[in-house]
Length: 409
Ligand SMILES: Nc1nc2c(c(=O)[nH]1)N[C@H]1C(S)=C(S)[C@@H](COP(=O)(O)O)O[C@H]1N2
Ligand SMILES: [Mo]
Image 1 (tube, rainbow, N blue to C red):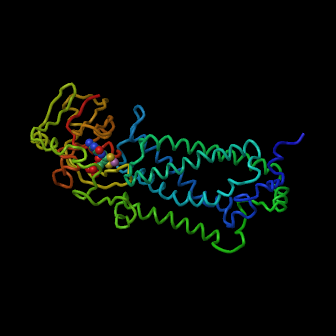
Image 2 (image 1 turned 90 degrees about the vertical axis):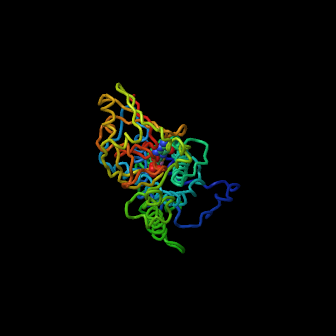
């Protein structure tokens, strides 16, 4: 009986004459750089960048929407800043790497025969969610850091689930490839190589630099690497302190804004300009012994300072020196037990970030403040006057501004 894997190594039948046109005509793809040898070399950069982007993306997601009792620990205070910075930087670096890789392999879509067995079908079908997912992730990610929210879906949810689809498709794709290669190895490289010579097809990764005119493979790799390096280096200043002068392509500079810090949502956009400045403002702390503080009472309480970054999921982060009351002092005074979470509410009436939950590791941390000053001055209205939450190692979306209530959960 003929072994089915013979199908994989048999010299390829020629396409029927009627189909030898367009991308199926001989020599349709002129460049000698198309093919697995180029793709594999690009994969050595794209693979790790993609993997790191995926893992840091998960950290970002779980930091923002903690499943159950999970929460990032409050130390190191710069942990989330580093992780989210790496997430955005690796995502940006993936853009030229992925485009170059797709360019290197796309002629294979017209491979003949189109199907050579189960593994081959899986390898080919997985391309749809893999390429679709990867392009979706990179384009929505770039749109997000540029604060371009024209799409109808909710970015966080779509970006999260598309990551699993993409990585799942990648696993299927690579597994199918391994099966195909192992079958080939089982048939013997020697036989295969001679067949390859006969049929003029080689797809060995170790294939030497192909002869011919035009851009060399080394040139293509160098240009792609340079593109990845350049766009990463000229955007990384959004979160790397001291690099902001290099920030030519970044949507934000981390040092521009009131009090030297960018603003995510202004008081006007949040419609709190009147309520935040209302002289009858009260900060209410609701627990077993509820109490309320007016602005003078809040300012008269012992203040502590903390040097902490704001790290926006949109890719920028910036340091600030904040001073305010420790959240844990307020919780103690209200009789809130050490193991209880609290919800911090903003004066902002609508909007996804008008309140956030603070679990005990952060709630009890001495660096977690309801800050009333930034860099020694009263908080700017846009930074959350009269009081904002600032806590160590926490995504910016959870650093609630214009706080007027803390409620025991
Ligand atoms: N009430 C409220 N607080 C908020 C937000 C918001 O939209 N509403 N945005 C958050 C986000 S996404 C970030 S990154 C930080 C930014 O703080 P900043 O504007 O003072 O730099 O505020 C957070 N606090
Ligand atoms: Mo943010």
